[in-house]
Amino acid sequence: MDTENPLMMLRSENYFESQRAAWELVGMGESAVPGLLEALHDPAPHVRYRAAWALGKIGDTRAVDALSGCLLGDDDRAVREWSAAALEAIGDPSAIPALVQAMRSDPARDVRLRAAAALRGLRAEAALIDLLNDTDPMVRGMAVTALARLKSRDAVSAAADLLRDEDPEVRRRAAGFMGELAIEDTADLLAPLLFDEYLDVRVEAVKALGRIRTDRACDLVVSALSDENPEIRLSAVTTLGEMANPKALTPLVDIMLGGDLEEIRAWAAWSLGEINDQRAIEPLKKACSSDNCPEIVREKARASLREVYGLDL
Image 1 (cartoon, one colour):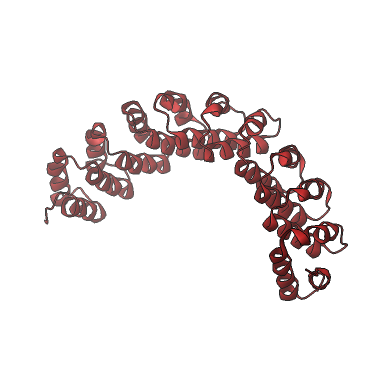
Image 2 (tube, rainbow, N blue to C red):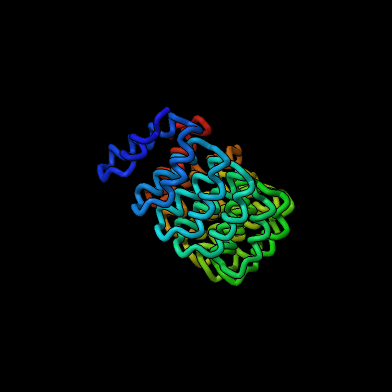
């Protein structure tokens, strides 16, 4: 099949003509690979990144070395990003070292993210675990997030060390890892993060404990109800509803009928419905009739009684 014309059209400055040519080359399959490899050296960046894209679609391993070279050496960010995507699509593990190097050293965050996604797609657990020790916090954070998506149990110990990382974003992502895997005996590892000086870290720790769902995790989330920041208290209230653990009933009643912010009290009423425990009915009725409860709290209490317990007040 003649590839000369579509390769020439790939160089068109017209977006649609160039993209149509790229699709045509993909349809030609392996016969288009030599020409596309040459196109990776074209002076025009749009030709190079479309060639990388097409090579990824074709999936021929002959392109791995050339795409790795583009990933590490091309001066155009889009070309490097599409090269990483193509290497993931081809799926050859020989691309892992180049992807690791790009993740460590590329000046563009988008390229680093794409390299991390490619390593995840290649299930390069060993390489990602090694990156948890990188000196760059961005690399550590991206690696632990990729491992979370892979649900890598081999990474639990190293990820636990990152819960004490000097960088707050790394700590936040490590907490997310623990929540993603939801291993029962990891709740206490997250406990110190409930006192972290950074709000986002505390929020992520609460959410992670909510996914673990053990009694101990529930107790820790209950303790966050006393956090000085209302965002943490709100996160704890809604998380307790998602956990649906009866141990949270009394603390939630105290919040609903107490003196916290209206929104937090209202969501406590919602969470009492989510727990679906008959012992919540009387406190919810009390909230509906209490002058001390703002209307938003009474509305949520009525909704819980109606939707969960079948009672229409």
